[in-house]
Image (tube, rainbow, N blue to C red; front, side):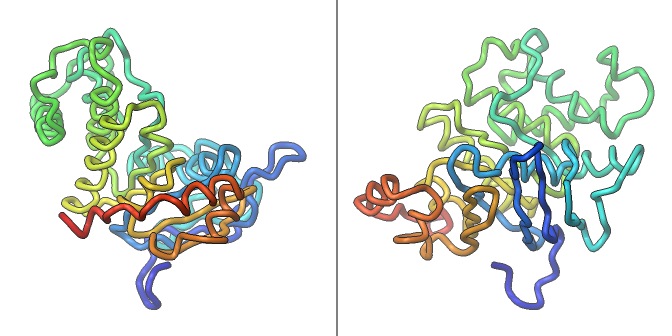
Length: 270
């Protein structure tokens, strides 16, 4: 939970989303101060992905209010909505890259939200944007692959390209929806370390949906647990144990987690 008196950059007030008779998100209220790294955990169907889509306005809330720096974003339309989505970058599980384009041009598409005119549609990006894209790739150890087609890369490499593309938007907040779900453990670690470094070094707020309890404990100083569309836990990793885990995941996962030593925190060794 944010400390009392800390200004919240992102606020959700009793936000709900219904799909027919199904309540995917149920009266969620949260305050996320600038610069936090927040893990959102829960079983499939808990409402995690829907929550991020509501924040980014990929779908509209059925009730409640979403505020960014004190201003409502729930009703934004047109140019104002495009500006919000540019500010609020998304990283998806499936990468959403163009496999036939090379890495550099995939990353450059992230600047389309801020570039006007038709030139970028024909891959005629300004030299300043191309240079910035190379720098973003270099920061993620992907510059050497700049002219490779994305279809030739591993899953972990593709996800780092997707993150570089998101950084081209110059976002103030990144919403990562299960970014490691399709990756092997080694690549999952690399992607999570990348997101944590971006948060730590650039001060960009990161909200990341995760299934893995141990990954959330290691990388996220604040964890939000969801079950059946509701927030059932909001606190530090060390408080995530016992009946709280059972409430989020069920008894079977709780019993398994109880037998696993708590992993060393990333910020303790950084």
